[in-house]
Length: 144
Image (cartoon, rainbow, N blue to C red; front, side):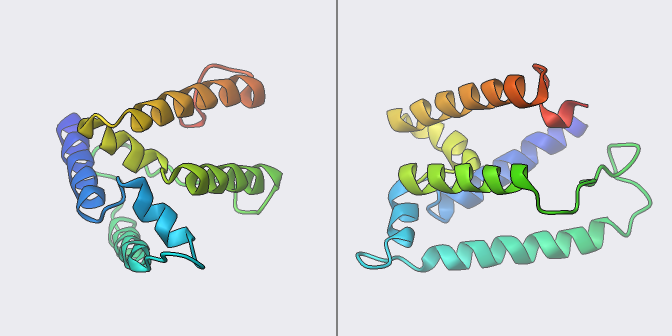
């Protein structure tokens, strides 16, 4: 049942970012182009995502435990450090230069757009390299 729930959540997420235009890298690049053809509609997408996330956390964290797990796994790090800043900078540069962030890039693969495939392959390679260099292991941070 947990795999079906994950599939349905992924499909809903993919449909939402497709409808919002997030799978189109020009949507993102036009949002970042303040002096040119600025497109402010991404602000509404971000605001809606924050509102849904906030409401979801308020609702879900009232439960004694998750529906499909033994316990909630929440981030233990609370401060701002070099890794957080470095990751945010790399994410922002990649997002601004390519117009893709990870979720929309994966969702856009269904359209057969070759830059999406190149981005996703590059992203996977970068994640594997970073995991090996910074974690000293082949496991992702969420694996343990």
